[in-house]
Image 1 (cartoon, rainbow, N blue to C red):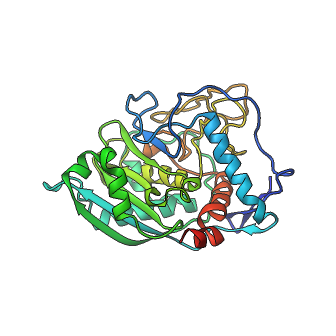
Image 2: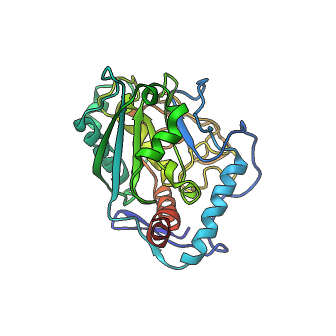
Length: 329
């Protein structure tokens, strides 16, 4: 591993490809889908699929990973760091009758949740204590170094966009999106009963910058009405994809898993908050059901790992920060 922790903050050194430890091996078949997005469903067995695709096939994940390795070549040997802050623009899309009109207070609480999650803190502990789901055995939460600052909230009243965002997503995002590769744009709307949110990957920005960002169901923000998913960790999860992470169950029990060395292998997504779950008994460690990149209930999610933080820093340096952002802007 070429990553290291610096005062509790995850940092990385751009790797030499011959030295960088990677999980490699055979792949397992997954449902074919379109590239460019990852999504969080209300359960691993849900019938709803994300509007722009679904879980990445092993081949698509491998291509995204290869893009990362190629972009890091020019940064080899440099110490990579997360940005001081990531500006956040939240686009609240609502219906004419007021549905989905998320308050400024809830928007700010969502940013607070992001900051707590990505710093290794627990801002939603009070909310969690009132829920029936209790975290399973928790892993140590890493400070990834990423911090978020709300820069603007836009409000759009449009019944069609709100109730059928899938059909209008390209137009809506092209009209509303602000900033460059390093600006996090979050869109809230009604995504239906089975879908919580979805996100683009950093590798997709250069080809389609207008569509870059995270989409979440409005009722998943803190204080929303989505039972089991209203503490704000749908956004935590999707921002993880926006920063380059795969699901913890990517590739199942087969190498290279999710391309992160300190997250245990997992055959399939978790739902609820199972205790002692181990779907890959031949691999070391129980399933990472409390990791933010799983499908567990919000109350069960507690942490990112140091390896995930390192991978996010690598993606930032390669696709969202520094020279990459200057080219994009």
